[in-house]
Every structure is written in C-alpha cells, then in structure tokens.
Amino acid sequence: MSKCQTIPPKYTHDWLDKLDKRTGVAKALTERHNALISDLGGLQGLSYQRASLCRRAIHMEALIEQQEAALANGAEVDTGKLTQSINSLIGLYKTLGLDRVARDTTLQAVIQRSKAK
Image (cartoon, rainbow, N blue to C red; front, side, top):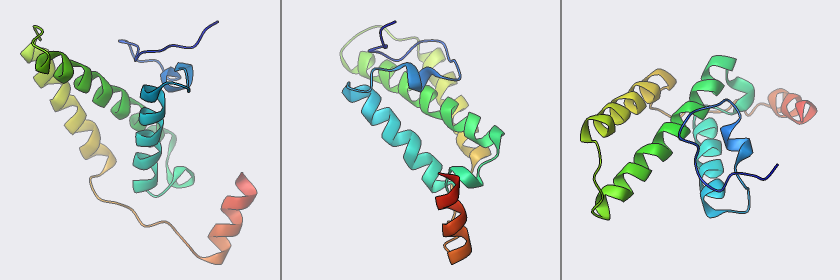
C-alpha cells in the first residue's frame, strides 16, 4: 500500500503516519506536531486525550491552510466552512493550552525519559 502524498480530508487517528514522509508536507506537519507536543511539555507528560487532540489540531490546521491557499489562488472557498474550521482550531488550542509548559529537567526525570525510549 502506497503512502499518501496529500492531507486526507477525513481525520483518522493515524493520518500523520500514513503520509509519505519524503514529502515536504509530511515533514512540515510532523515538525508542527512535534513542536506542539514539545510546547505542552513533551509526550510523556501528555494524557491520551491531549495527545489525541494534538493530532486533530495539526490536521485541522493543515486543512485550513489548504483552504487559505486555494482562496489566495482565486479558487472558490466556502467561507462559512473556513470560519467554522478556524473556530474549531481555536477551541482545540484553548483546550490544549496556549502557553508553553516547562519540561521536568530534574536528573530523575531525564533518566525516566531515557528509560522510556
């Protein structure tokens, strides 16, 4: 089965894993996902729910950018759908938190993280 070259229009829990990692889109979205998780204090500090919301937020952000790019290129875009998508993304970000969370950098925490890998 070949990997996807574009963002799937419907969300699935493994959508990011299904992207062809050689493409610029996949690299950029993986970077964003990792940055979001890092800003929230790292994967080890995230509950299942927050990790799930992170994947959804990156998917929503990518779909919004596709719509914005189409609009910039003169294509017809459903502005109601775009606005609704932006509001949904804002809701996800507010739920996740808008501020960076400091990672626990005590020696004990670093040792536990290295053992978990």
